[in-house]
Length: 296
Image (cartoon, helix red, strand yellow):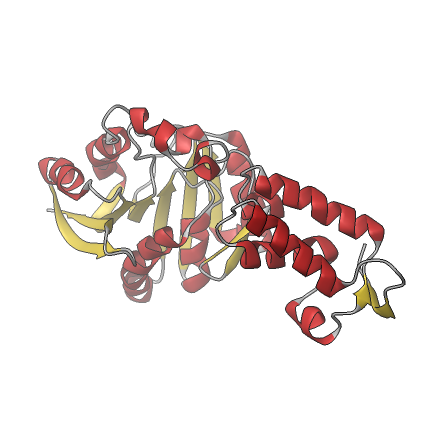
């Protein structure tokens, strides 16, 4: 279904026209990033690249490709996020397959990887290996990003969803990281018996009564159980703070992503459980986003 490279369009659509019409359709529908979304969808569906668009704008586009692009545009205009349509998302330089049960990894979560990476490197250099537990692993984003950066590391990804576990395994295989990654289906620490140098989590932290206020791209297309943090949004943090000690090596750390206004409450839960705050990171908008704790 690729365009006929270098063949002028004979009354049909060209690659340039396909890009232009896609952008205009998204603009007219009020999509926030029409140029970017149009480019991603057209290139993915047509199997072309940015180079093709610049060097061969007049190449003919097969009618089946044009129809497939139109179908993808209808999905985007209907509110489906562009990366859900593509079926993958780039995270920390890795291409990760998505599934309906996995949260779409976002740039804010890369801050958690940034916060943990120096510790993982130090432990791996000193002890020869660093072990990581990723709670609520979803697509495997956090664990696989750390494994890709630190060859002398191993990780276990835990998720209550069997589909998420399967997706994380698929991503590990595709990235050549399967030998160092284990995926386990369970509820938090339920089937975990080992100790780890680092525990990481981007847990559900949206208060239940705020789910209906989320943007439709999140509300309708991210899995609710990856978002719903209970009545006050802190349910997962209570579980992690209360149970992590039995699974943490001496000197180990816990890194969690948080909601923008949750720092005092989350910090208080971990302090009460015997931890001290080691690091706090903000996102690009200046909002509290990641906290790192060490057992006192």
